[in-house]
Image (cartoon, rainbow, N blue to C red):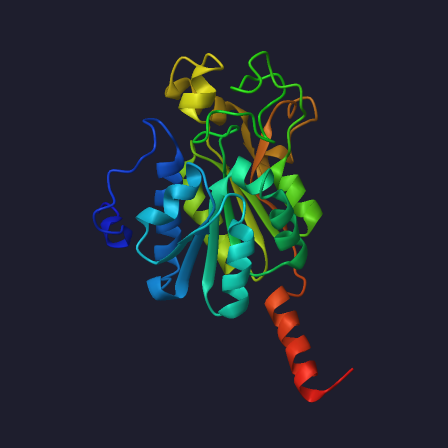
Length: 273
């Protein structure tokens, strides 16, 4: 039997605004399947986003949603989690919103290890706001603001999250749709800051400008570069050249921020020093 997505979709919001071939719809469906597999209650789940193509996602989901300012999703989500620590807080957004204008909030959410799940759709570009290059635009690839090629080295979002202190970090692709819900579900279940990067090529402002012939070609690129972490263990450095690891990349246990903050509150109430 086909999965019933309709029960999770806010009435009257479809069709969505994403371009034909965009993988954001694939991620939306993966998130819904993850929520369903964990039996998350709508009234106990908050989905928070900033600005951008990916950040339009909460508008389609029938649960508690918050569409905030550009780059400020992690800050607003932190407020939600601190005020209502029993809520399941999920952030969604793109590479520009999350790691450029929102980069400061992102690294400090990771540093605190607050119990939230951040799904970052990495499409290598500022898709909605004009096709400018982002921190993840590959070296020498074109954008509206780098018409002769991007000279900047690009961020590795997963390594950035690990280095900043996130305790669950995973990566998937829009090509491997069946993996997305599993990674998101595992991230939600993890007690601490979870970051799930989904590689999700933009077919319009990135693909056309960089001479990709079709969405199929872009999806095949994702298929070719993605290597599961288990398979990578058996490959040489030469074989891994140009490849991108997928699956759960890092997992650790350390104190969660809301729980630690509650200890501070209790100490203050008791007058302890």
